[in-house]
Length: 391
Image 1 (cartoon, rainbow, N blue to C red):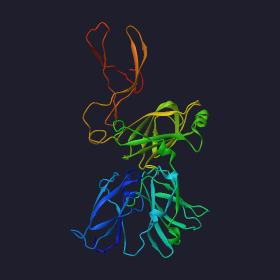
Image 2: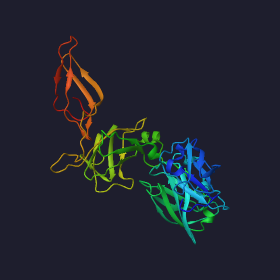
Image 3: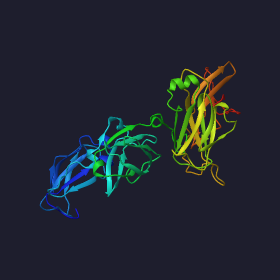
Image 4: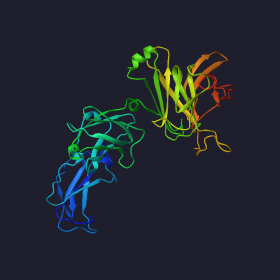
């Protein structure tokens, strides 16, 4: 402590750094240089400073429970005789709809006629919505960071999360015009992102750039209704390491037609042509969610279509490997979806989905077979293999 004040209260708040899921059972059993106090809320430890500090002008505690690791807490102090009651973080009323996001609210600083606040988000979901309501108080939104914000007629502030959180506060921040005292106890409600809930992570072996994707009906149409009409569907691919001219290969079931790509250019065929496999080339810049989006349509069906496979290849590099990145040694991943199409006494037709190696499609394969009479194994290298086709 820079200044030691006997009987001053110090609260260690781990909620923002560790997240709600890691706070169960957190408590302290012993303190030196201070006296343990009743914790004001889950995820906190509170002490009252003793008459004299320990070595280094400090106090120490022994804590147990929870899973906070080495995550630093927020430290809140109050002088002797001052109220150490609810802070803006404690007083916020957080609706159960916010559980997937684990938000925490606090006022960062205030001035005459305005204030700046932050909503820390434990589980960031681009596209999710957070609504902050102040009851009868109606602030005027000035600016928002890491989210787009708007003011409603009832005085609430609605924020749609952007691609990533503000790294300083691990969430969104905003400034408003109004009295900070009237805004000390807001209510938060949330709408989780349907895109985030439907997002599928792509294995690193399939895409060295790092990617995830979702396939959802455009607008608010239920999936079954969209399938019956043949769409339209919105395909979103988020690319973690954006490299212009890199290529994405998308495999659909059934065949779909693509059009209106944002953040990428369709390769091969005309927009609207139906195919099971589509290729896109990344543009100079990603879209607002750090990826690409494209509109898709499929023949009317009883079940929604599926994006069953996504692979990528980095852009060509002059004078070096195509991916220009570190190559991981070892065998490529095995092909998937192996099916025997036809078979006779001297002919067999196989079909599989191509495997990948360091994000690149494997184009050469060896097929090993052995007769039932236990003749020696024979290795055969087929030619003319089409990706995803028979070999």
